[in-house]
Image (cartoon, rainbow, N blue to C red):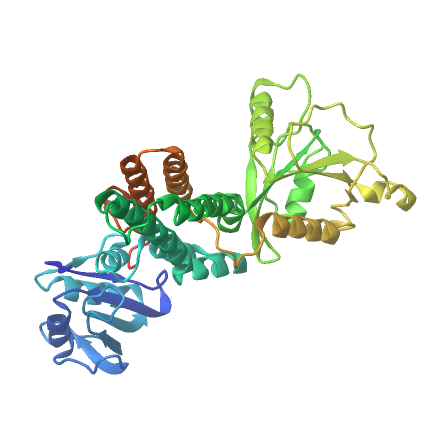
Length: 439
């Protein structure tokens, strides 16, 4: 696809920096090179050049790499200027480039959008590229890299081709029912495969939560009575004074969240208001938020003060709970091994903290499964997969061949929308708005 204007943006990190990369893409790229450098540069080679304004004054000296289209990231002519990473240097270069007629500043995600529209990436690869840029942990990096490499797209396209083949067989029987070389019964050749495909989609969709944990993090919520040591433990685990610690009950009233990197996985740790009866109005709101948050968590860590009687608090109904005794430094060591606790810790001495972190990492590992597995990476994918499966199931129940063919067409269309093979214009603004400027 040919665009009338060319786009430019800073594609590297926040300024100032040692080196800044300014990327330009579009039909004006070669003209811009001749204007800024006075000449073109060899293709795909780093060339040291003096970059100048139109009046001949020097902007900077830097490396220039020219990627001719269509063999470039966007499919267009692309050039990257590697200059010194000062704010004034980059500003001067951008001003010189945008002063050229037909070159403008890029919108967020516009380079990747052009790559998609020029067939360099499909939608799943595009979304995975956004995940790769935003990856904070090793598991997120590996998961995004697998999808960015096209493995997930290949799976969905394989399923779509099976649907196309099945539909073609049905339509062949409809159109050529009198021909001897057309099977008399489509069910013998395709319907068993459609049942397998439905089961494969079901199994794949079941892995969405594991993929969500890899992308968004394993969700851990800390609950307990006031003064059970929640905020003290929270601060020690996060290695900073994130929560207020006081002997006065009810100092934590809102949700406090930080992210940990355990076993290469992101673990979201949330401190909450102490659970107790008859709280004040504001504290009561905090307690309700704590209960609501715990109900959707992957794990609830319930803290109980070893020096106090067990509090009578009603815990939310959750599937996974880790019971932890706190303030172990205030009780004799022989009381640490108690059957009603999974672990005993002390935020003051550090007793049991390594074991707690190891336990959290192990549970996160188990919930996420293998980061190298092919898992749905977006709710959008899951919704379209479920819609496609529903059409396959309906086709299996139909007795009319034309209705079956139409259901399989609709199922294939849903899978096509995942990777962007069919019209997805309504999704593009949402997807590419997730990118930073320069990507």
